[in-house]
Length: 224
Image (cartoon, rainbow, N blue to C red):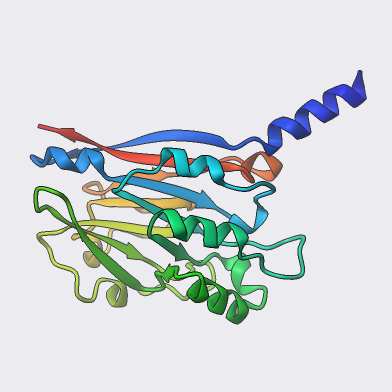
């Protein structure tokens, strides 16, 4: 019985667990509802192909990779990343674990796979109805590589600005956070000072093996 239970547990841990989340936002543009973010943590830990993702994607899907976090393999594997970049635009944000390895090799692999790296930089988009929004990516916070001033360069106040990072910024009450409407991050900081005008969404609070095959599907819920 113990052996059977162990096999079943390992089988479930290899299944792709999809969590659906909503960002409730006051906007008049209903086409925001068609925008879909797929948040994938620690892509280097995935034990299976991500073919299930393709069935979820639409023409407005944006994939966000929250760290690679290679632990077991000695080499970076490009198979999953190439597959993802073939079905939707892919953006990557660094974690502290990424920098503990040969991050230059990872950087080269991501660029070869046509992945845009958001390290204190941003990318702009537009909905079908003309609403502009920006994804603003911070470099790793735990190793003090983040710089929001650099990341905001070129962004406009009239955009819907969405900040993304692996770890949460400890103090987001600073003035340069005033233009951030939505903040997505992998894990929160304890005792953080948060800006009350910003929507905060922690994507994953699971730990260990259960976290390895979990992705979040994020959509806007437009409030009028």
